[in-house]
Length: 220
Image (cartoon, rainbow, N blue to C red):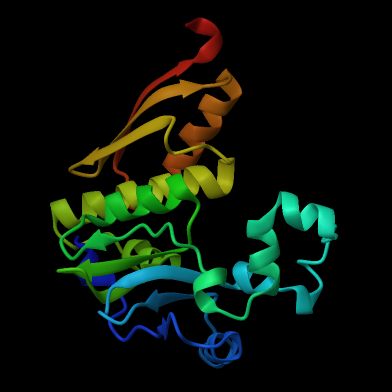
């Protein structure tokens, strides 16, 4: 399954010249926690999240120890807490994917960088966005979708549940699925953790068999 099969096409955006008030009104009206920021050429210049906005000094979360001395030490924080410019508040480190990116790669990108949404671009322009909800929709019904599509969705589901239910870092455990057979490789902290993973795998709809290639760290 590709990024363009699950992405949201009608994306709410703001421009680098938009006001903070407009950004907040847009997010509240549409029930969003983040917006892509677009430059004059239509390219993604950054992401503005609710966290960026909550740092605004008007909400009190950016005040902290904002003395003259601390402002000199941490000018970036001072600017983010006081500026009304979207370009000053937004996160400029943006992770994007192309239309043909596998959803497994999109999920890994989100997990690895602890982000909630990934813009989809084509020739530098924004064409869609994928949120965690979009990924969840893709893995709700993994049966009957064809082997390749179903296997990829299963792998995404396994990685998501390893993190959400057992608090495990997907980077430390390699997940591969072929013909509904799941194979897990990597290191675990204890035999108890290994058993918990086995129970988890037994309760994932769509996994027909499980191959355990995990190694307890003490045994290495």
